[in-house]
Image (cartoon, rainbow over all chains, first blue to last red; front, side, top):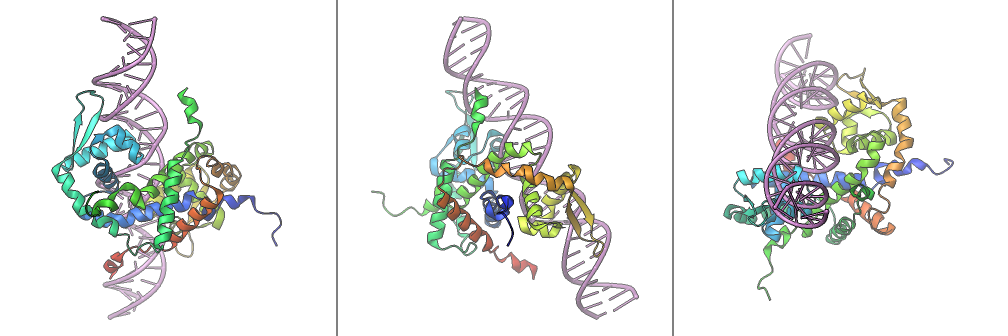
Length: 156
Length: 156
DNA sequence: TACAAATAAATTGTGTGCAATCTAATTTTT
DNA sequence: AAAAATTAGATTGCACACAATTTATTTGTA
């Protein structure tokens, strides 16, 4: 028997939440790469398009809040999507600080092709349907309740 | 009532596994940033160190397999860890293709300081203990069973 | 109404993440 | 054993991801 319980147990990869989460997310993104390439999107661009398809045109700010990305990431991604003609970017007349992201015809049509993308996971993840639902539910709950620590302090 | 069930339901962010997974992983990494900075590590470097602490010295190849990173990512990260004196990199005498990653004294000592890192999550994720365990279990199961599609074909 | 504070994007700098390619060492074949 | 195939890392190129800073616009206030 090994004496006292190991205080370092918490540092084992499998005992943490963060590592399986991080690794699992990367693996799934990897699986999506090929089917996404077929419709001309990167993973991040796909997330952006899904948000626009689901919620409609909105400002970069709103978009960033929905998909947890800041302007440092979003601005260049949106410029690429604009170059690919899937969206237009337009300063709002009422308040020129806002950039409205607007789906183009081409961007709307892409939705049809994108239907095949989520299917790429079929058979790749060996979880039962119930497990999948439970997993998704827990992730959403965790996400809704992430309480970014007291950096709020700095905001005065 | 809206007529037929919407075939685009699968493209909603919340109906997918990939988005909550991706977003959740990023949020947790964000929470870790501050405490990691205190001990002088980035998130990726932290994952590397945890693998070494748990499994001991090993080759870059083995390390990469454990933490799902390829040499394109690992090589520069390991060089930085070497510059920070947490690891040494040494070509194996038996087979010069392999680079052995070896914890230094400093790297071993860091383990003690790293104990505070996982604690940063306390109170940030509002899941019950049981939910946490379930979530981690499902993620590990998913990860173990990721079946990267038939690109194996290309390998002939 | 000027001017300070606030706000949305854009920019900059650093650090991944990964496919594709290259290089050097080793193993397998002929 | 020499050539071919394999293998571990290193390199390159592209795309995020995000903190920190800057810029342009709007809002709040004296």
